[in-house]
Amino acid sequence: MAKRTTALVLALVMLLCVPALASQEFGKGWSDEGILGFGGPWDSGSWGVSSLPLSDGDPIHVSVMFPRRSVQPENFDDMWFCKELRARANVVYDWILIENSGFQEKKNLVLAAGDYPDMFIDGITKNDEQLFGPLGIFVNLAPIIEENAPNMKELFTIYPDVRKSLTYDDGAIYNMPDFSITPRDMFSSAPYYKVAWLDNLGLERPTTLDELMNVFIAIRDGDADGDGDTTDEIPLLSLGDIRMEILAAYGLIALMDEQQVFADYVKDGQYLFLPIQDGYRSYLEYAKRLYDEKILDPEAFITSADQRNAKIQSLDVFMHDGTPYGVLVNDSDWIDSYEMLNYVSSGDGSDPVWPATLRQVRSWGNFVMTDKCKYPAEMVRLMDYFYSDVGSLMIRAGREQGTYDQFGWRIVIDNPETKEWHSEIDYDAANYDQYYNWRMANAPTQGTYVAGGFQNKLMIFTDYKNQWYSKTKLATGRADFATIPYPEVTYTDDERSTLMVYVDIANYVKQMESKFITGEASLDTWDDYVSAIKGMGIDDIIAVRQAAYDRWNQE
Image (cartoon, rainbow, N blue to C red):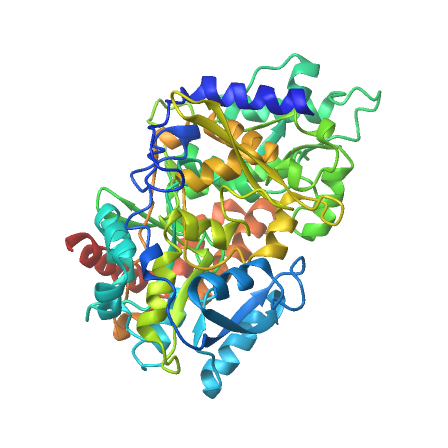
């Protein structure tokens, strides 16, 4: 394993031409632009340490409702993060822990009943903001940010698109989000596949949809795993990420919306609803062939996540979503065998396209304060502290950089003259089967922070799986041409009323997608499908989303 880890580090260095670090004070002001593809202009902003502690007297208590993950402790009071929060900020979180699976329902109930906490640091959606912000339940943070959040103001200067997406027509801001400025994470993932199986069959890596289909057929018919049985290989486990791959090949990109549909795309200033575009029909035709040719797992539409993972663990699957190390226990089963699929084209010579992700990331956490909070300025100052390198690590990793006690970070200086360095971590491997679970036991890993720069270098070099993931994803080259398909916009009350019918449209789109692919509905009825969606009000939806985009684009 040590040899593999060293090889991965060297491969990353060669791939990305890592520059030497400037000689600066450790933990503050490091300029990591270009390092491992994890840079960006953000280093530490105003750092924020001078704003702590928030109280010189009794500790500040605030109630926080939080979606607890199954790998986290049942009580957070003894968590390293909570002890550090008291020591650094003189703040105590009074946790209201809700199991993650039931969090959304519980959140809606407490907000409707008025029995809500002082603040949330995870689980608040854009729809929540638009509903409870104007009612005064969520506090308008804009004036408080102006007076108390120098880091966020600096981030807004660097990333004005994020400020536009968070700001409503009346100037209100209800959410302080995570910022993702890591090039590796700035574009959507593609499927993973067993490149070793290509080598076994003497196949080249596919570059077009036709070549990809031929690879799938060869996997289906050949003995790719070399066990003497040509019937046990599953070429494609689910449509998942391959859906995005096929759509992009036909010139269409989108991020999955709250209804689990790839829907929203602005091209040349014009909003497009993907499920009624000609390229979407081409996607359906290709996906139907995957189904008809028995390339797609016949149980793809009915298997649960656990069942899909079990199939991956059988080692009989060629291509699937997600990193294999998240499912496969033995490194030898994935580290030398898997790659992320490179971009494949339709063969028409058009420029490649791929969806970039938003810079603000709600799925990783966000801060929203309610009107019950007695310490609005103090809490915004605290959240702003978490945007610093040292604060981001406190949220994400559970141990501050530069410490090496029983469990913690250790910085290894590789070259004292150039200050080149890497990090190592010692974690409680006897009680935690992986580094991530140890992190989850020490910190919430959700809340305001900036994912990028110095603290990302610490975490990436520390974890060989993260190194491998970085290498395989960046090697696809998608960071060079990925663009955000449609920004996060805000809507007026009238527009939100119009959008209410979208739930029915989205459900119809999902139902018809599976019917078209399985043959339950014929693609000869495509025009009827489009007419049905128009009859459900899609033209009004398109007009609303175009208007919202135009407002966003003018600011």
